[in-house]
Length: 238
Image (cartoon, rainbow, N blue to C red; front, side):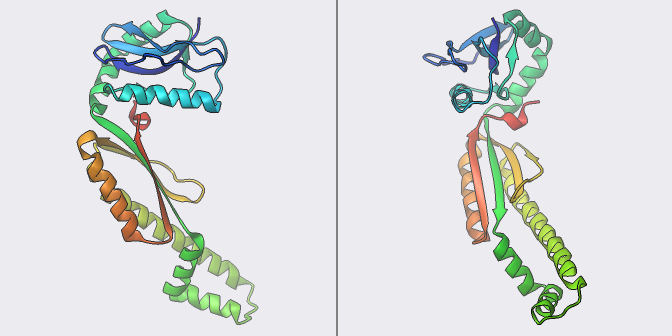
């Protein structure tokens, strides 16, 4: 029977899996498949797994349970294997790499930081602080019919928004990275101007959360921080 794979751990992980049921319409017990120095945490499935709310929640619950017992390499939602021999072969083939990754992320958790900015507040600040933007805006409001003015103002504001947000993002990353063993910055999307993850050692997590809260207060109104964690280290599994 096909197996849904949640994570990989070392053989000495306590694997507290009691009473955990897996994903799917007919949930099977979560268990481990052993192969050399590694274990894959799995459950049997009889269907193609889709990202339904319950299954996403179960997937995350298994990861969080495992995290409490030691280092874990979490797999992204939806990974399946044909059977136990396929899993055993995969673990044996890449055992050295999996063990190295488990050692690298040991004693750490992932934190995810996103930040967005109130567009109206930022626009008013640019018009207030940029003489060129303020002048163009006043000419338009005074009735200047030059058709190039709105385009020029729009381009100037867009450039200012990008420059200011890139500088702010760089400053925030610089301030928080010292608390992390590793970090990765992703392309921000939507209203966000910052999207990055940090691998924070257990003994620095309180410091990190305090620093993040302090930064949010210092920056003040108009910038919204969204901090998630501690999380399984999805972003740092190679």
